[in-house]
Length: 371
Ligand SMILES: Cc1ncc(COP(=O)(O)O)c(C=O)c1O
Image (cartoon, rainbow, N blue to C red; front, side, top):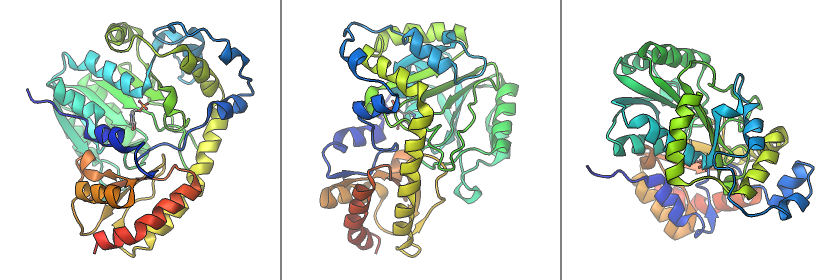
């Protein structure tokens, strides 16, 4: 069986720290340790005194309790702390896909779960969110796609790369069809808290007994370097998931766990910072896009520091981002990494001056490339 590599992550991992300006990120620029402690009203004494022993492998009781509070009806026994939401997704896929036949995935999406399904030999049935429907899926297509032999339905809500939040109507149809199939509902909620309008998207946790939700500190919390994620599952699934967790990373480190307790406890303050950055920066990007007078088409994102744009003419998106990387030393994400040629994902979570600088550098180059 051939192996499906994770093209987006390979691209970002290779270049994100080697370019002059990185516009490939989907979260806001990171908080420093000092900023996090200050937002949490904490000093560094406890942190400096922390023994660098192994942490509790599934997350400290304190952290799991903080996380459980975010999910109605959940207890710490529903929560597993992972090394990033990437590990939460990986351990979940390993657990669920071993015996799965067919997985329905709302796409475009972060391609980790899709790629893992392919690598575990499971049939992937995508349901495409439609630009012409404001990035909603066609609801009849959702009903048709979730067949009785569907074992898992995967949703990224809020969505990467579109920044769309699913409507209540789409949510109900996905839920209804997933319940009817008796399938697992696997929801990646990692962009929750980065809504531009300020209302946190309700979790899918609790909507159906076979629901599991993934989240983490990398996007709305601006703390990707902590490498903390989590998955909230029914306890019997958690037991199976932990068996996989033992084979992968053992657990996150105690430094990250300690800081994560403070981040989750004070998340409202952190989300305010995130939304300030998003609401300052999106207009800067929007007026830049508008200045190309029709060369770009897009829906303003509702969530996250990402804007997914279609461009007219020009080279393939893979070619375009490579030329921009080589010539301007700026990193963008090609639509091809979401199976959407002719599109680009632009990150705008950088410090505002840096975003302006990148867009100024890009302007003449993009005009030439799209000519
Ligand atoms: C939807 C989604 N899930 C998971 C991840 C992985 O994030 P992390 O492991 O940093 O939490 C990303 C990263 O871009 C993402 O976009």
